[in-house]
Image 1 (tube, helix red, strand yellow):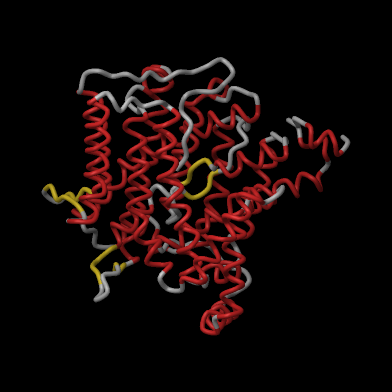
Image 2: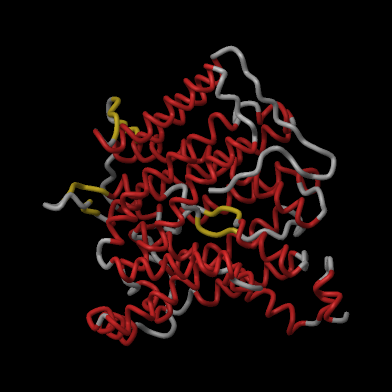
Length: 454
């Protein structure tokens, strides 16, 4: 196939391009997901190498369950960061910054594993009742404010990290913005990664302390090692004294967050269908894609990795390359698995300056809230309808107010985060209050009115 054919596409069988080009396309997909995926373990205390390993394994499991038809990559989800940090927080220091105990992450991982099983339930509902009947419980007036709240709740940690060195943080922000707006080709697809690399290099040049920290960490790490931290695996619960109250609190705090990620998944599959010109909602169907995503999340959590989610970044790569063959995404998954077995590579990433993380996360968290706003706007939510105003108002106030005032609400041994309370209240009010004015629409060409990402 000629080069112009690759550009003009579409290419549904990448084998016609030859193995070298398939490998390059696979690397492109890996780097597209890499910047955001590696940030999640940095922000939660989970293991970097394990994250990469189960991003790759989760993607391969997803492709297996979807009959190898959907070109989606499963990277780390940001929607659960608040849940991880809520469970591992044990207090604050003199400056008000949170004090974390990473030994408690095993409880959070158990909660996320249970959240993954919610996908299985929704998958079964889609199979039995069809798309329209299930989606009426997830209208934009509920999901939009929840997504907005996620970004706003996380914003304080981004500001705290930026405060470590505002010049480095601003450099990361400037690089991300410039490449996102004026970048060409591949650089426009990976602005987050470029922002991380650029500000990291600037830190090494102008901050001797950061440079010394990186040299020490990387030189001490092995080239090859096993990417599993036992203390974070759910199996570790069997050989420790379990705090039952904390365990159930983790479940009730984290499981409601799956609402946002399940709707995110639905939006991503719609976007991939539109990009590739194929209706993946019908073949292999939402029931298979949800099952693959949910089981990949549960598998990752059992071994101490973050929750997985379908990545819109890789949908951008599909649109750029016009190569829609799922084989190249599976190649990217294999590359992620290979990199996960290099502790030296993980040490290089872990030693990243706090301000770099802050600058990049400042944009990412803001984007989460902005996507929530876009969800409400694009679906034309009618705020002249008082029921919609009440639902949105209570979701926002409960999620943010509880988080920044009392932290959580205790019901017996169970502690519910503000976001968990807001999610439950929003779903309940939408089901109870009269005057619903939204109906999920599915069109023949594979596009739907749902289009948002966390």
